[in-house]
Image (spheres, rainbow, N blue to C red):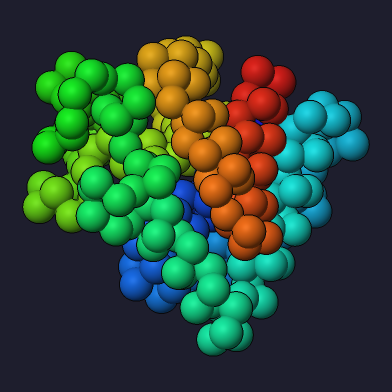
Length: 223
């Protein structure tokens, strides 16, 4: 069922996006276990005719979900993971090994706030689904977790159309928005970001997060 695939992709993007939030924000969400449980259920219900790239990427996300689920229940494991995420993506700007902001990768000069062109384009995309970035700028509009959450929202929107929950909308129109967002934003920088994560960490879970994001993006053209 097409809608189930989109729901599974949404949950997978949501999982990796939450994992890359500052650890103090991500752990309470992950401890609830809803994303992990729902993702596993959706992947188990994939159709037999699903493209291998989609199936493999979602199975990889389930393995990651299992690893994250075990880690949030183990203080030693979570400390190691959170130290790595913090050191790579959260500490002060000048010491960031892997900045989690699009404008760092696509704009010249130091980043104080998002580059105006990047920020305005992202806000236009978010507004297409009636979404608005954090007004208090706790998480910037070009943060990796925000962009991955928007991808999740797009997949959920496509699923809702296929399920008949939204009237007067063609699912191909939502798919075009998703394609445009991938081309205009995600594909321009997130592969460099995930490569940076993998090249600068010895933490297995961090590497698995990077690998899962790349696998999901590689499966996009088959959805």
